[in-house]
Image 1 (cartoon, rainbow, N blue to C red):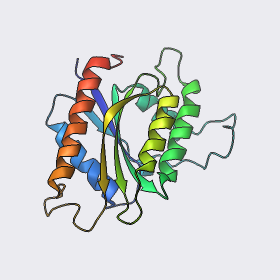
Image 2 (cartoon, one colour):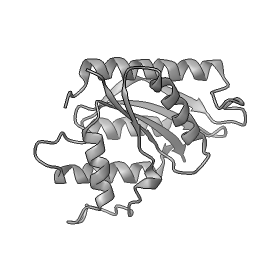
Image 3 (cartoon, helix red, strand yellow):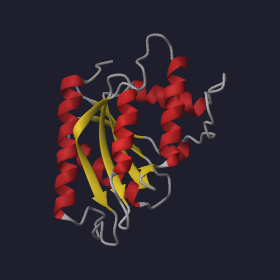
Image 4 (tube, rainbow, N blue to C red):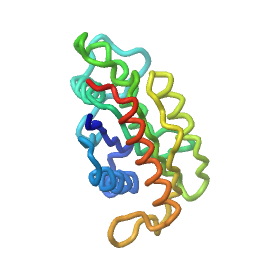
Length: 193
């Protein structure tokens, strides 16, 4: 079985370190035997979910939920904002979870049993890694199988080299290890839908 893996950057800001790290993860995964796709949250604008989901779930939430339901694994690239989950990413996760109930009965739940790998970017000043810990808790509560290995990188001026690759050897090693762990888990635990 060829695992299906989706890369989800938690920022939609053009040229952001999050999107650049997602690009590097995409490059690494593209060299393997996977069916690879990405989802840019800018392509799926959603209103702020304030309280319980309303009766009508936005079409973009249903589309994202459908895409998640088709995956064996999801690699989330998450920026840390004020020691927490980036609001854009958290809002999308909440809407995807709410939209899961609107999928056809034969479809898999968007989060249940999907393998999730986490890569995080902490700010150079005051980054704690708390955003990834919180994200891990949220996704596990939704039923995802979270890979133990994670890639936590501190954002800085020299994060990427001239070729767009991670400049630090340790950062490259952490991302390689995470990609390998996601691949191994996706092959072993993939939903095989």
